[in-house]
Length: 271
Image 1 (tube, one colour):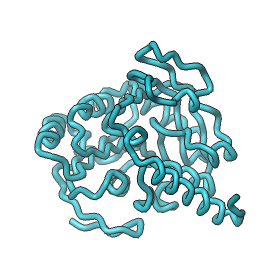
Image 2: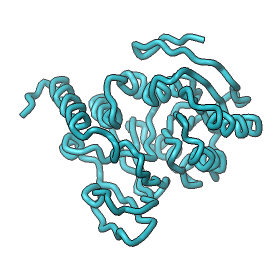
Image 3: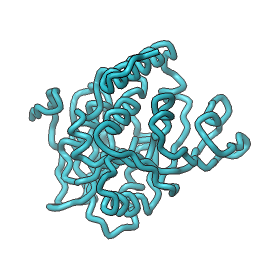
Image 4: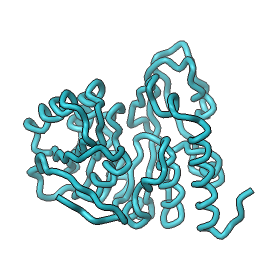
């Protein structure tokens, strides 16, 4: 099937649509060859302690057969899951497709190698209900994995203990000036679907994890970004993660262009 939206063309197959007619919140999982971690992410999405009607949308971005077998094992068992398969075009486009096909008012992004804690859907949905001006929310969580070789301490306002396998990830309060200097909102982030679509979703021009920063800056122009001060996710540090393996010069250049465009939209000069 083809879908024309967000200035893009999406071609996909419907492997299975969920059986829930009305949902309030959608958890969208873009997946590509992540069978090692995918089960943990999907299980965390399906075992939420909540009365909220929610769905789980998985977009398989052309993964290998072994990864698809993992997906199929879940899809057959739970009516809340929808699975869409497409050719490999990158996780940015896969997530955008998941949002467009979702039925929820609120969207929670869950990467295949992360995990939601059991109260995440309840807390995030309730926060959106009570704060109608909030267009983007982010939460605290946990770092899981060896910190050696990572520079995450500069992203954390609380000390991290590199001897520990699990560390709290307490994020800074939202401040636009800080956002212009650093993307610090990531993981267990959620969007009001209306705002996500209004700014055009994730821009496929940006790679190297820069799309998150671009989206946050755009949403800050049309709505409010709020910090939920609860630990609602686990972020698993991987040696193959993009922040470890990407060409740092390319990553810097992408982020530089994002900042220039954000300033231009605000009619400000880049220095």
